[in-house]
Length: 261
Image 1 (spheres, rainbow, N blue to C red):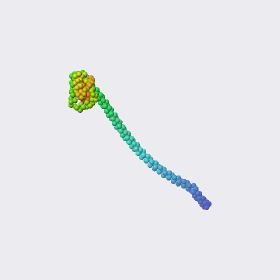
Image 2: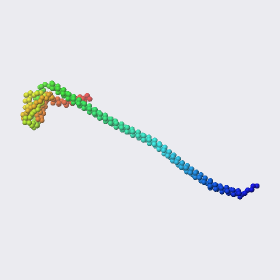
Image 3: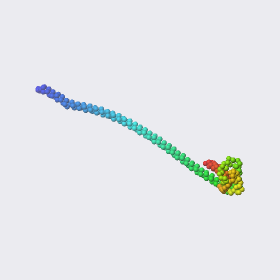
Image 4: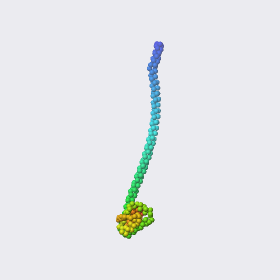
């Protein structure tokens, strides 16, 4: 039979237990504690990572929403810019059209003004030409009897004035300052002595004094005579009658031009 020493075995067991307890407190417990701490730290890291992941996902959603909104904002801004550009283009086009219309209106006014000036110049030249031709024709063709008749009519006119228009008579006499005033006579042709005597009598009666008579030949009168006594001018000649026709000639030309237009 084996000789078993129970005391020794018991001592070994006790030593083993003591060693196991010592190893537990010296080695295994710190390891377990560190493992627990590491596990706790891993849990915290996992929690933190999960939170960061959630935040990242939230940020990603925000970024995606922002990108979607940004596309809409860009599209809105582009539409607004396009609308503004179109409005500015239309405004510029309208302003340009108005400016062009204004320039065209001013140009038309200027053209009409120039045309009217040309018409007026042509009108004046035409009237003057007609009067000049008429004056030349009358100068060449009017018989001497017409001149004599015009002179006689003027003499009668002065006689009648002295009888009928006393206000005019007083005005003439008041305008004469010389004791023997000079009567200025223009005649288309030379006056005969009889015509001069016939003229001086009514003029002297009109002036109520003797007068001197200064006679100038003026072919521009065509036929007839003009007398100036003080401030009074008495005219009876074809040039005067021709000038009276100037208005009728101008009116006739205007009507003809309007009809052609």
